[in-house]
Picture 1 (cartoon, rainbow, N blue to C red):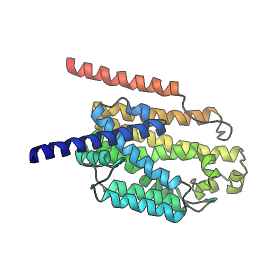
Picture 2 (picture 1 turned 45 degrees about the vertical axis):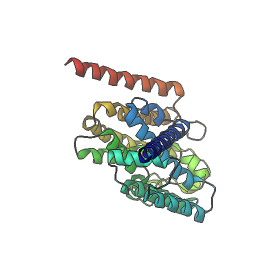
Picture 3 (picture 1 turned 120 degrees about the horizontal axis):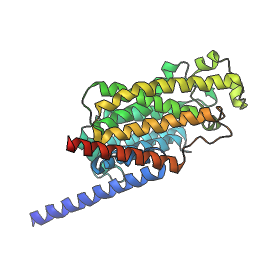
Picture 4 (picture 1 turned 180 degrees about the vertical axis):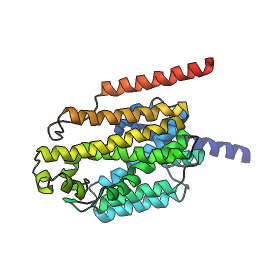
Length: 305
């Protein structure tokens, strides 16, 4: 009787876990505009856990960006914090998340740092340049982006502690790219991430930004962000040889796709109002195929050597 009960319990837990991973995949496929295609080059066991990490990050981001009151947003994030401290009777994305955390020994502090980043977003005062300096902005980028990279390399695997530094740099580069691309989308919601010192350096005013003035000083402001992001992407290339082949091509695809976003901003003469800076589905599929075959050929070469 006990054996039958335990077998039934194990079956139910397995079904709940499988369902949770399916939910995470659905969330990722529906929302990860660039990442989903990059993830396709990963082996199935790694891909599932990356979906779980993305789904958690997306869930937290959706809370921060929701129309809830400030107090309700904080209450919701506090509930997430409480859930991170227990694995009992949780459904939705949590079984897959906890399974991935355990399987790959992902430090929970990274998840709490991410939540801190969401709180920073909620605390932003509307219609002002929130960060004084680039170093101030980097603290935010670390919490909302770099820690995600640190989570992911635990799943990907790495052969040197230097990988953490380059994962952090890649997180900075990606978030700066997002901030640059979405400067006017963020402005429409009252969020201004570009540091005050950058406005001063480029002799472009916040008032001009709010009036959507695309003059030469505005272009210099955008060029400054692109220059920073490119330097960080170049540095983050050093992460690739530290990551196993089975995961390396996913990171390479992410770097190339995000670098392509910077190319498109330049192509459209830095006009982020009248141009929707996004890669087409066709381009993303091409990147996916390119890196899928790169991985396949590397495995064939490895087996024949």
